[in-house]
Length: 222
Image (cartoon, rainbow, N blue to C red; front, side, top):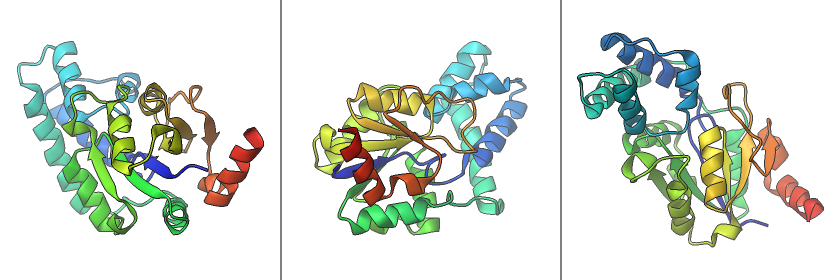
């Protein structure tokens, strides 16, 4: 059985995507660009800075990428404080508690900024379960580059072969596999237009990967 679980955050732990969507599209309106939904969907799993660098290039914007990031984060912070729809995904807290009670090491590996990660963890009191948190925004490259999961495995204190990733995005799954780590794709109602074909296992209900259920699945597969 695995010794460490490396969790993505947006779309896996918390349903913050609607807030990100609103914040991004408010920023798009501020800078007078029209971003098609299919282009927006392709950004899932990337850091805000990389997304804004891509937007600056594609739309030939005069503003710097960091300025776009600041505008988007300003909108997100306002939404975070005012939007009551933000909540943990169904079953994820039970899953986190289940892994923790079985002695598994939990690490958060998200493309979100550390400020947003800390807001989420504080609101839902999650720090008690995780030994470390890592933000892709602080790394040289974001998903689908494997760096974030390579570093997350290091932070767990276990070999990559003893870790697994829970991801909901095409880019995140690609990053996990590029890092040589077993990946569980979480196909939820909130994860649209994502490709799970490279995941080692795909689930749509966290009950399917509770500690005992996952151990049974892995022993059957082997």
